[in-house]
Image (cartoon, rainbow, N blue to C red; front, side, top):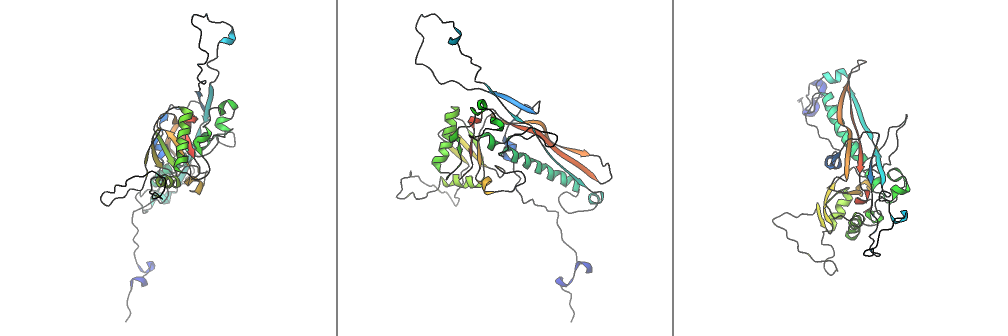
Length: 342
């Protein structure tokens, strides 16, 4: 007896398809630095600059003699402005554009947004934020624009490089304001002692205990969590501690560290130390930047993220561009730390 079966009925014979309006994006899209860094005054030029200054070492070995008159030769006086240095960064334009043909926009398609133009705008806005996040956490060195290339801003992995001699620190005077060598963990295993050295070096360079945010890759997150694990405690020389597990919940994640020089909030970020056009790599997983929770690091927006509809000049369909113009401001690079190895 002939029998119709479900697998025997094809689409050309009338079998319907079930395509829901659900859509799930499967790529990283969280941009914590772009979301959490404060915004300072908008730049008014292609290069935005600020003044950095330092102090002399304490001097108290030769106090003035009581009752002695002041000496007036010029050598007896100091220039208190001589140590000032002008630091700065260049603005960078972030831009994406897209278009949708007339028929593609008119027909019925699946997805939460039936308009492909609206869906394209939403997707491009997300992508532009990841572009900005990647640039903020990159090792890019600023470069001036020309007739063949746009200007590029310096990223945090460049600004926190204690050995940098270009870009942010292109002169000997500017190099005196670099992050100190101990503030970057660049080789070997990220042990608890190595991490404390980074924080200690930042404190010694800036002399200020404060709260920090550590934006870091997944390998650093795992390493920090490992600091709290009861590994080789029995018979070892480590400090003893009690584990109090209530109910059925066991917490194995470090999201906040109370250290000797302040509190550190740990925030995972998959866009640290990535090069333009590259995916997640082993290097980006083990990279991170330690940023104070004040106005030392900020974003200067010349033009916030915006969408501009473009006229359908040739009849090819709807089109638009999304653009943002901004730069990264780091008033005191010595107050920052970085990690590029676990």
